[in-house]
Length: 143
Image 1: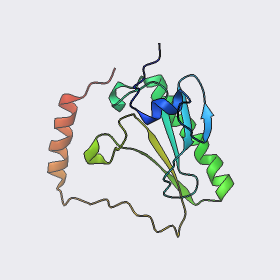
Image 2: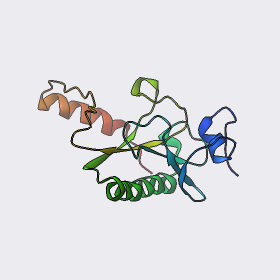
Image 3: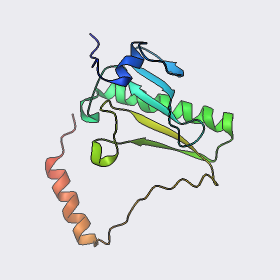
Image 4: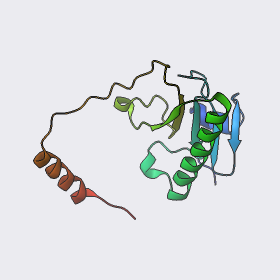
């Protein structure tokens, strides 16, 4: 049984109630052009079921999303002669997720595209890194 949210633009695209330039579709995954692209070939890859968090996406579907995104990335490199690409998934508004349906951005990149991620780098010691790693491992649950 498919899980959908009638208020979700991506669910409406899956149900063909909203228009999108669909590049790929199978039983579990869909890929389509982003309507507000950063560069030519900016693509969104989504699970067809509605999941708000990537933690809730079944492993086989998450793996399929990555597989489809990587194949589309190779096609974009050939089509646009791009220099590289980013695969990016944000979770939560503070991370930049603006649609509450899990999605991966495939962004074609060019050496001269003037698009920059504003990654900051913390000044952190190896001891602090080890402590942070311990905190994560204590909470880690992989099935």
